[in-house]
Amino acid sequence: MALISAIVATPRKPGRYDLLADGEHVATISLDVLERLQLSVGESYDDVAPTLAHESALLATYDRALNMLSARARARTELRRLLVRKGEPAELVDAALQRLADQGLLDDAQFARQFARSKALGSGISKRRLSQELGRKGVAREVGEEAIGNVYEEEGLDDGASIERVARKKYRTLLQLDAETQRRRLYGFLARRGFDAADVGRMVKELVGSDPHAGMGDDDIGDED
Image (cartoon, rainbow, N blue to C red):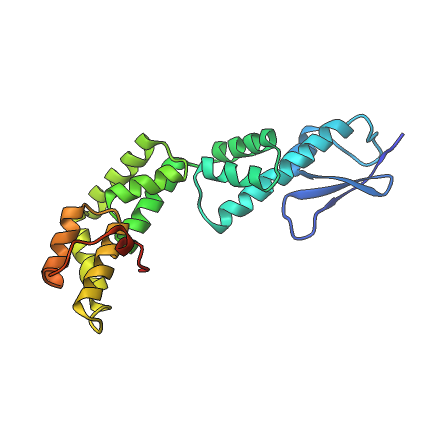
């Protein structure tokens, strides 16, 4: 019968403990598991082996999810998709994400507000584009719309002012180019931010002037920012 031979703090991982049975590492667990199972050196490992295996696997998935959140905020669906793609078992992912949500570390509404504020103020993208981006990240439509509405109200934003601000800023970087190139790049830049085509055309005409040739095509929208 294998016995628990040591329980030691995991180096450089606060709150994590390595459990050894007969001198061999068998699991890494958290302090709450250690206390909940009342583990101690000298006790039988065989009696708790299945439970420890599950808890250790769940903790590894949880820690991986937490590290990904620490690197960049993410929506719950997006984080789940990435973890499963990296090989984490779906049932462990769901349990780990629920734990993060219960701890207030995974909140789609908060993520949506942060994302909307950053993109609206920084990149100057439109409400429509914000809604599309949040949807692609797995944020529920109603959650995304509420977040966008709150950000626009708090920051005093509207798409009319936003398109003018980003259009004039972009136009200043195009002054060394010929008018046709200016029109093409400015149109594509604004279109990619999701602004209404009529508003995009109006801003291009205001800043660059009328296009003597045909209107912009799909290829023009693909120009780099």
